[in-house]
Length: 502
Ligand code: DGJ
Image (cartoon, rainbow, N blue to C red; front, side, top):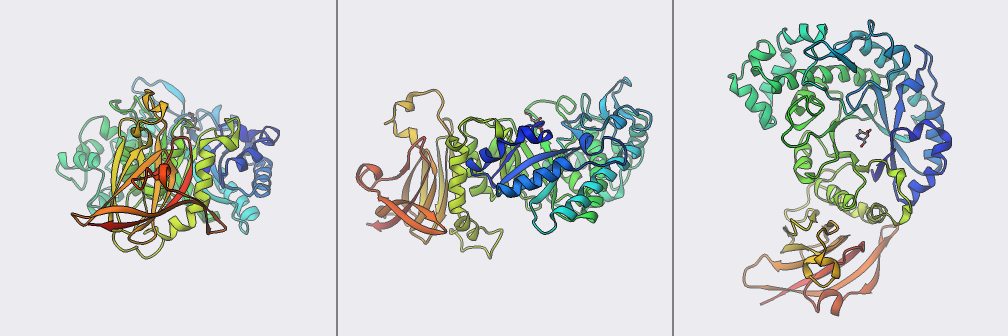
């Protein structure tokens, strides 16, 4: 999914969206992530209005786009701002979460059975409608259930429902899951081990007293709530569903960040509580791209990035997500806000992805029989502070460096450098396809004592899957046979053929 997510309110107006659709095509998106708002589809209890969604389906099809729908239901960024007025105002029927002093926010308590039932009813109506309208076209690929669930301003809810659950035993389903899985996230593993890996007891008996326990407790009950919505939705129309997380900033404690969403430290709790959710996904508004991606790309969890801040470097991270993690999709947030859509770096990268996807994904271990060792495609990501990295592929060790490390360009002296990245796809032991921006690659034979030389190098394009060579790259372009370079600010594909000499 070469995606982009709309700003929150854009999809609420058909007229506002009109000029946006062609812009998305100019940016080479193939998938749009767009909200469906509970307050607008069910303004009166039991009376549904899907005209916004129907128009969106028609527009997406007319512009050759797929959709991922974001269910703005009980929670959106922790809050319950998309609950319809009849839900917001009925606080006795739909109790709010409370802090330890008893104060409320506009956050519906996940312990409210009434809220769960009405959210579920609305979600099922949505999925039934979708089945009726989209079962053949599959314009909608999947649905995000709720948005950035998380507890604020304290780590847990202290409403009467929450208090009751907190003093009950930890559900057996969670403890069985923990016992059956050896590869739990380290934070949860340690929390459980510290109390002696107990297989029964209350939350504080099993996990100890503290904020991490409060977060695990809330994660279970948020997950259990979502599970009921997702499983009922899938019974109506079975397409993939996922949940997204607001990543916590370093050094913040649970409650200071929206805690208990599907964050790495409690992902296993979510997996146990919500088996109908196919995967858990990070939203990126902070710089630790590799750290967080490593934590979400697990054997039981493919990486999908539903939101990334639309900022300089986002395009390089998209390349890296697809090339290194085989991400299912990537999606900068507020994608419609750009001027000059076809000139956007993300548009250039998506255009490259359109060309190389068939080649990348036939080499993907996730989709076909694993390629021979050393023949898997991979990617490099280079920045001013981490300006080199190394891959082993085919018969070579490939050293990647940021293009500006060459020092030739006046930009090399700038305090920040555009992020560089490339996907490298081996075609044989000595031929490589490189698609990217702002990188320089040098090659070293794996066999000690040998040197690598360039037999041929060309830039080119894939047209309907066929390679069409452009310039033959030699002389200054490959530094007289020393390297492969895709300069900063350029986006391209090159094919290099290597040989060795003693
Ligand atoms: C993350 C949320 O999921 C989005 O809906 C939006 O509110 C952005 N933050 C704003 O930066």
